[in-house]
Length: 225
Image 1 (cartoon, helix red, strand yellow):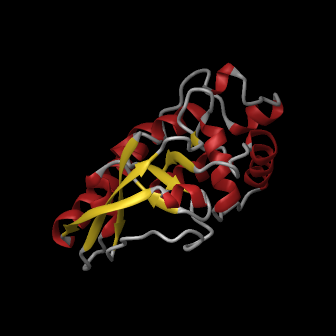
Image 2: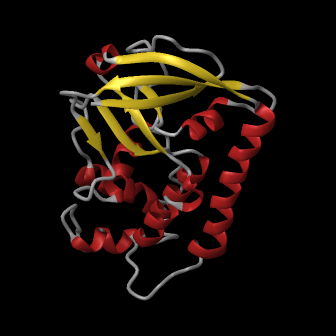
Image 3: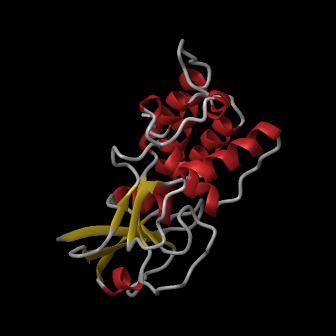
């Protein structure tokens, strides 16, 4: 099965290099792509710097692909992966305790995966996750916040085998004047909807991190779906 992927960058990348990059990205070291050409163009530009959407085809036959958005996983599985790879500000005792609880009970083995599919934790997503750890929003609100502004899902190549199967097919230029403005509009939309609706939209029966810890909820608990 061939999958079309795109990688936004300030340069053209004909051959992604296994083992190269920043180890502290969302899912650790890897080559971060998206199935959306438009999203790649947004990710590839800066305020005053145009970029490229590099285009690829990936032969997925036989690859072990971990999809964190499948029904068998909950949002806390995604958060556990993020906590292992990104630096979080944990100013409160609750946030620190929450971090340790999620890592201990919701971590999944992704080390053997050839690729990972999951949310992209840009600044907006990151702030939503921090609010959850600090007990400000419920797990329902966190789930809904992940979809505000359609901030993006990413496909990350992790293994040498996956890197050997990706083929460069060309690129499209992303002009900063157009695509940086689109990126900023998407982020502002998500933040506006979050603060206007979600952050203050508590409902009866909402479950917060304190209750999750006190009741020792586990990944198979239907209340976390």
